[in-house]
Image 1: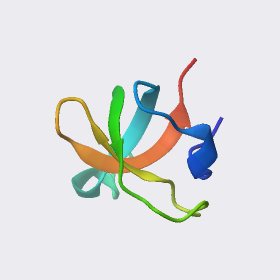
Image 2: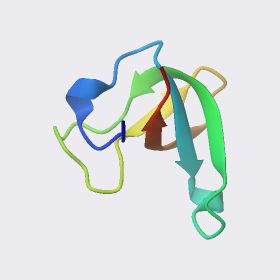
Image 3: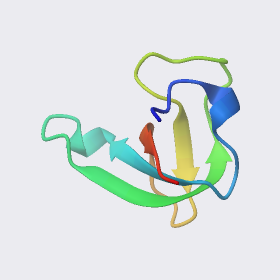
Length: 64
């Protein structure tokens, strides 16, 4: 599942995000959602979140 819909993302969910510095390489970072930063219901590049370790990026995949 991709991370473009805010309704699909909840706190504590395990996700892969792409950090701003990794946008060129496409390197993904795995972690658990602490805060949802995007207020819009949908974002075409992914909902922006803060992980529990403090890193901020856009959700590329929701892991189950």
